[in-house]
Image 1 (cartoon, rainbow, N blue to C red):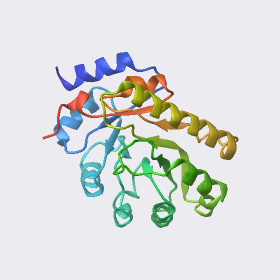
Image 2: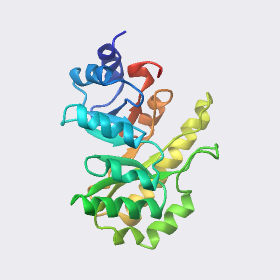
Image 3: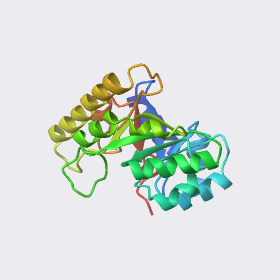
Length: 221
């Protein structure tokens, strides 16, 4: 099927209020434009220099989401234009995003990444670590960063019961964080979870945005 047909098929499975992030990393501008011409405007990338080149050469109404592990020394490449960074996993990175945002005279929206999977190689705050970070109100020191929600990745497994449990845990953490630290902040509303293999489960568990690549563009070359 074509990119457009793939998107139409995914859209049929998504509630209207769930955002679709088209994960375009490693795909060509021509392929991205197929999705763009099908009406999509939210695209996800995981390499700072790659997305900077795409930003410079593709339509300016695209909203670029950074979804991969972000190194501090790469923030400067995306700070002028990035719409949302999904993967903030510590204060050092938050501080650098704030510094680069101030330099570019803009506020950058971010999500805090939570470690919910069994794989150790995945990044993110562990649950208690997240609460400790928020309890200290450290994030209030960074006025050029706006925390808009949480992100997490389930274990890469075919065990749907495990995936469902991990997404349920993240939803519970999101609700607690919202209630305890952001109850009066309407901008704290995003729960980014679910990818090509598990997005239907994520949607059932409260995801507000899903990150889908291979089901749209095919396997990466």
